[in-house]
Length: 293
Length: 263
Ligand SMILES: Nc1ncnc2c1ncn2[C@@H]1O[C@H](COP(=O)(O)OP(=O)(O)OP(=O)(O)O)[C@@H](O)[C@H]1O
Ligand SMILES: [Mg+2]
Image (cartoon, rainbow over all chains, first blue to last red; front, side, top):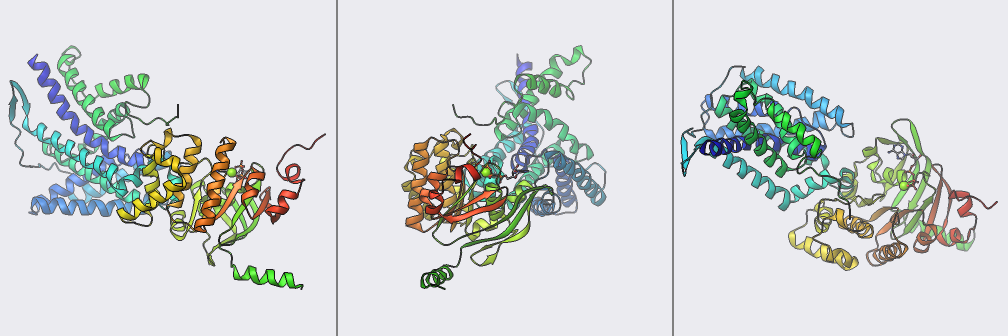
């Protein structure tokens, strides 16, 4: 029973990391209806920028602030050079554009900062802590709390601020938003910046665990099943989807893995996602069109 | 020139048009000609009806004025739109909203997942009002549309068609427009609700002096509230006359609104 609980809780905590990555996708999908393939590269880029600054001797807070400024500037540049010229094109065109963008961002990151693995120490020790007699990792716990905090801040932003309401308005009906004077370009800039910052947080936490390296950009592949399960348009869905994927893959690895020779985690989330597609194509929290009853 | 005519000319020049559309042509996707040649004007404080059969080009004309043509991959390829004496052709819709033109789209287009009140608030953001101002403006709109107040916390997508139309108009009014482009407010609504909506539009026009350009299929009703009307046919202005004259013409139905003539 303890093994089960430990595996389950460990999986949930690891899953919050997937949630964090998925939230970045949801933000951009909501605002512009595009699956942003570049989110993984942005995550890598921001993590790499942060760790390079640290290595150059910039203090933690300074490095964080500079990275955030770079992300905000990057968001404005992307909006002006990629999104604005392609506005009103099909989602497929936009998707291809983000595909191209991911190579540009990745190339820039590695060109400027090299391709080697950087160790990142956030000062959170990965020691076991006991709750009752269930052992969990302190690092996972801190990471999970960070994810929860970030989600709470975003929820507050969306529901209580003018920018948040404007963003939801754009997500619901772009034309109507334009007709009442909402500046779509500015909303896109803000959303890409916020998605970049979520990416930074995710990049830092993942990076601290496995080093900041090229493979970070592949978290896109982890986010996809999370989004299919949770729905592309709901932050709550991204969180729950991440938890489900995290818990399910860890449990599967522990309990089924040994019968199939291990290595189950890379594909199990996809197996789960396909199962969900059969049962609930819109995802758990995906928005279906509202119909009056 | 007769005395009457000269007085009329003077009166017209004193009332420089708020909106002046000059010979516009609008093309979708670089190929589909939707509006061939439309000229029209609205003077301050007027309600003007824009009539015509399905596909005549009413909505496209309104989109050309509000700038929303870009969102449908269309272009004003000829002609100009002047607002308060300035050429505003091709200006982005959100900037035109800030200048005082607001477009209430055909089919209402409320923000379905936002509450009724959030929809209204979104209309006011443009002006960057203080909290206090927003509350006051909301109360003003609720006074015109009491039904919206009772539904303020309801998700807009779950309200009735009539309530959504009122919400779309109320939301537009919160931008403090000088000119409201109202596209088929009667679409799919019960006659009583349509009457109610037109009565409120007239009331807004009288009390706030807001001008309206209303595209409608419901000729009789819209002409009862409008001062003048334009009838579009295949992307051109076929008739331009006072509401009275238009109401008096019994050929309107048959000729321009695609109603089959009696055998
Ligand atoms: N988004 C679009 N893409 C391509 N063609 C369009 C588009 N919207 C309208 N059209 C075409 O432009 C012409 C005018 O359409 P418009 O919607 O302006 O007419 P309307 O008078 O508003 O008609 P209705 O009464 O049906 O609303 C039609 O031939 C229509 O097929
Ligand atoms: Mg129309």
